[in-house]
Amino acid sequence: MHHRTVGDLMTRPVVQAPRDMPFKELVALLAECDVTTVPVVDGEGRPVGVVSEGDLLRKSSGQADPSGLLPVPHLEAWERAKAEGARAEELMSAPAVCARAEWTVVEAARVMSDRNIKRLPVVDETDKLLGIVSRGDLLRVFLRHDDAIRDEIERDLLRRTLRLAPSAVTVDVREGEVTLDGSVEARSLVAVIVRLCRGVDGVVSVTEHIAYGTDDTGGSALAA
Image (tube, rainbow, N blue to C red):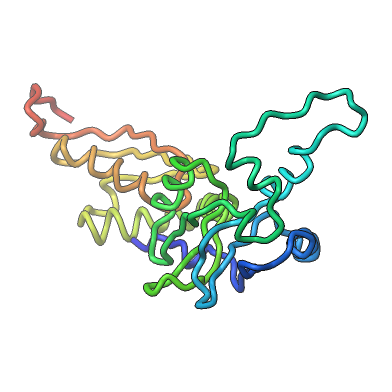
């Protein structure tokens, strides 16, 4: 089976900023390029941090309310430093959390979830910036057509990988939801089929109605 990688899904070329880019130029860059985040790179093109709209907004949120209606916000030292920052390296969130082009969607999604971030700069083996991948980019795998998902399961998974006869298991895919019907020789094979189907790009869920001839998992033997 072929899984699309971060390199397949990332956006390139990447809008980026040097460490010494001034605050107002950063705001203009985000507006002109219609992006919400830019990697900050060193002189070798390696990401050292990321500047987002949220980072820049601290410039306003950290100030006193001109109307005097809101109390002066209490900021931690690092928040105050960002609010008072004037260049990209003073405003950025660092260090940059990066992905590799060869990562799977699962690997990138887990890092985003664990670190609570929306985008990952993508780097090569020398840590130079290649692209950027967002949550939306990763979700594109779920735009695969049902026919493509079904063909991959039938051809690559059931026939080529598991060597099952075409009549053994039938596959129905609707809106990415896979339903499996049929029968196999051993009960243990059912779990293998389900696990492999869940790993196919674009699969939302898997439901199986697969009978088996022999229970080789240690339970009681059942006839299909």
